[in-house]
Length: 121
Image 1 (cartoon, rainbow, N blue to C red):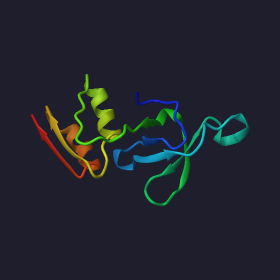
Image 2: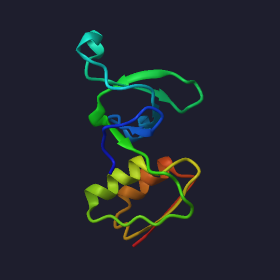
Image 3: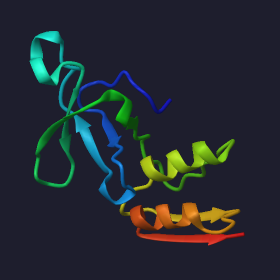
Image 4: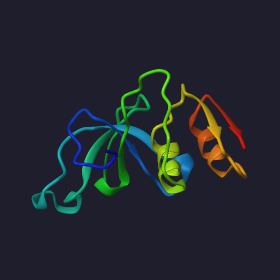
């Protein structure tokens, strides 16, 4: 559901080493072939930060961003899936209620992305 292959124009999340450096982008073209030199195997994406900057990233670092019906309830089977969802599916205009937040580790991830995040345990 979240992984590729991705099509041109599709909204994706680009995972970086730090949660604060991750961002949303739009797929700008197909994965580059062997003839692309240093960019071979990389997917071109255009940043959705208003700059329109195009970067090339490994497809395994991308996650599909699901369409945003409102409101939406997402249930995750395990913590790993939940953390990936928290990083990839929450946008700057979203409000999030996390039920079962324990020590608040995922709530902090959500707070970096959402307009509002509340965790209840």
